[in-house]
Image (cartoon, rainbow, N blue to C red; front, top):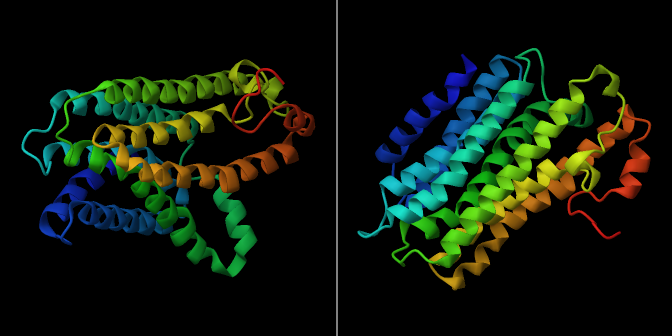
Length: 281
């Protein structure tokens, strides 16, 4: 049932954009994105599980990309460029959604990070649930997708080396995330590893190689905007916001949980960088 949520949100999301206009294409997208988030929040309250938001994070890049392709603001938008951008986005959406399906046991299980936030803020649970777990990630994702407006909607430049480079770069970022998660799934499938730290494969060089792949994906989307103009470099603030969220929120929360569960994790932390590998340490 809940796998059908993205399809419902996609159709209603497109309808909202076409009916309501705030005077700029991206403002319309932001408005629809927020409305869809509010709907998900309502369902998460009804079912008492904020993890309903997780598949929305993974799916939403595709309908936004598709909308930009279908409704460009120029007459000669490039189909080839759309394919170069769409391939890594499609890979990202399918891979991340499938990874969520494999690891989410159902409504009885809520992400430990959300539970920790509830415990930390006590009586402000509703505030943290809406603004921290739902709205804030939506605004970050929307901001990080904003470079696609320059890469697709107003880009009438011929396809160039920048498009090809960032297509390969972004696919490689998703592949890094993919391989990392698969290595971790295989490791966790062994019951003997329940209280042991994963330090094999990519996890030998980075404590969070899957997060590194996620972050690089958003930097890749930013890179596509440079094919429209190198002056768009100011848009790097978009993926930097995603980097900040992982560095200051997601990574510390994951590290603290691992420190509580795994006796050998502190030693692993001392030897292994959080994100970028030190191959020649």
